[in-house]
Image (cartoon, rainbow, N blue to C red; front, side, top):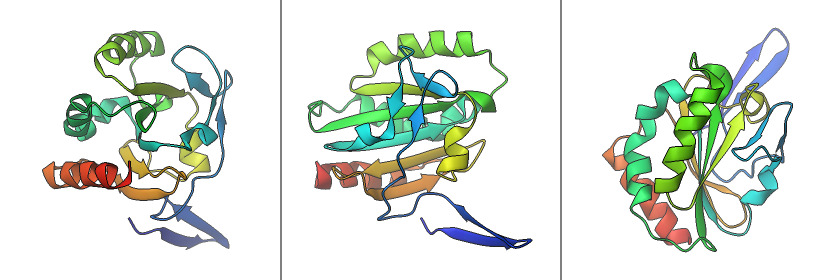
Length: 169
């Protein structure tokens, strides 16, 4: 994914995490989100193993459904790989309590998956992600972006993502 830079009224805007970039450290806590268990989440937890990071609008979950189905079938050891799904709660009409309840039942069937909540579009602002979309990244053990795409994933994307994970883990 190429980084897009716009110049508007004297200000530069940079969109999306780029290949080779390490995302800046962020914290999601009670004020802006956190883990599905209500704990603080630190992005520096994305170091030490390969991660597929999916930042998504719940209304666009179909855009990454093929990927989630493929990842659910993998049996990578938790010490070398995990999937982190960050749910953009501010992007949906669905009440948070209903959404969180649905995700708790999903989490039981998706091994090696951690759900994180962003209540205020914090990562949209801090990491310049595409809003109202599915943003998918594969991060290597050093937290460097080795795959990035916003929008609907197709079968070629899924194969590319799985290859990146296999090459890196």
